[in-house]
Image: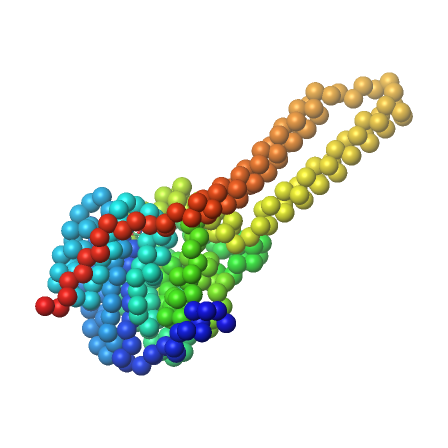
Amino acid sequence: MTEAGVTSEPTDRSGAALISYVLPVYNEQDGIRRFNDELDAALAERPEYSYEIVYVNDGSSDATLSILHDLAKNDPRIRVIDFSRNFGHQIAITAGLDEATGDAVIIMDTDLQDPPRVSLQLIDEWRGGAEIVHARRRTRQDTLFKRATAHAYYRTMRNVFKVDIPLDTGDFRLLDRRVAEELRRFRERSRFVRGIVATMGFRQSEVAFDRDERFAGDTKYPLRKMAKLAIDGVTGFSTVPLRLITRLGFIVLMLSFVGIAYAVGMRIFLPDVTVSGWTMLMVAMLFLGGTQMLSIGVLGSYIGRTYTEAQARPLYIVRQVIHYDGD
Ligand code: UDP
Ligand code: MG
């Protein structure tokens, strides 16, 4: 058992429990009010619990912050962590987790793609004894491209890299306080929170829901950010790509032996026929050059990761925490 595990008392799962919401927000001025309303309405259905609502403003450049400020003024349960700039979705989640003190912590998107009512089912499941509850998308409204790439990615993660992230889950999930405490001890910079959670153990369970379309605004995950998250998922959990380089080198070496045998054989048995060299040379050169550069790239991404981790800079910088007491 870990240090944190030893010190923590059993979680209070009774009606008196405190439930924390961790809510990353980035340029959601057109949807955030509506989100808060829906969350508020959902929470009213479970009045037995108390709640803590942690919005993390991830350096929004629109009116999001002033709206959040306004919401906090009218609701003492709300706490707003305001980042000094945009640090990214995964870091925003981390900051929220650092701040959350609840017996259970729920992470969800604030664009209404994760419906607030579904979080009540997560709470019920947790009350039943689960320590991690994944919200699984039964249907999604994303583009075909996003669905296809996500599908292929999760299957590759599972089969090649042995990180068993439940299919079709984003970061929408509930964590028991113990899990949240353990998760707080993972301090890597390039982080893939759902991958870390999947490899943590504990009693995991899931709830299926229908994912809605984004209520307002555009996705904050362009292809570039998605690719980075995908690569962090792989390099953060696996050194398989490094081992693949060795295998690749071995295959190329074998191929070159075949080529040598062919050239020598032609020379001995058919000395009158000249082996036409140009195409062969060109192909071999490009093939070798390509595989070498690719391999250097793989090495580079691991070295880059090592470098940024070695710098051990703070994960995020907070400008202010906004919180109004009841009176
Ligand atoms: N988000 C964030 N920082 C970012 C990008 C996104 O905090 O740099 C938040 C965003 O406000 C939303 C959630 O992360 O609540 C998921 O983002 P988005 O809906 O754009 O991703 P998608 O659902 O398209 O994958
Ligand atoms: Mg979204």
